[in-house]
Length: 128
Image 1 (cartoon, rainbow, N blue to C red):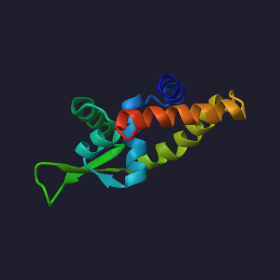
Image 2 (image 1 turned 90 degrees about the vertical axis):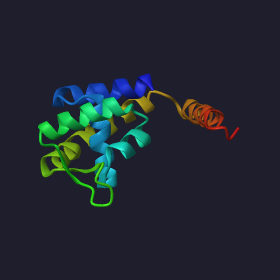
Image 3 (image 1 turned 30 degrees about the vertical axis):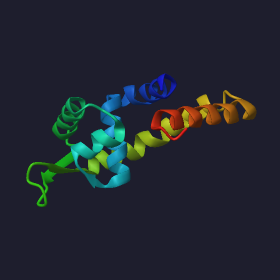
């Protein structure tokens, strides 16, 4: 995770976006519309961190909030045009940086790493 976080930080610092904010923007880009609760569950971020990041993104007009008619206790979040434009700009940079890191390993090292990470994931999720 440290490698992934550092790769994202390198891509994001020139855009004045923090890691938590980027995770929310990229998730909204994938999902379209969702709630802060779902963001927290999917990203495994604490609800306080999600709340602060959402407030910052909304203040910067990168995301929009509207009431959830099915549950008035929560809001639905989505990207604004400006937010989508920023994601479109940043995502290729992050992918390129990640590829650079990934390509620093040879094919056998990448295969070994994938297998080890899958094994750890299974162990953590109780599927091992």
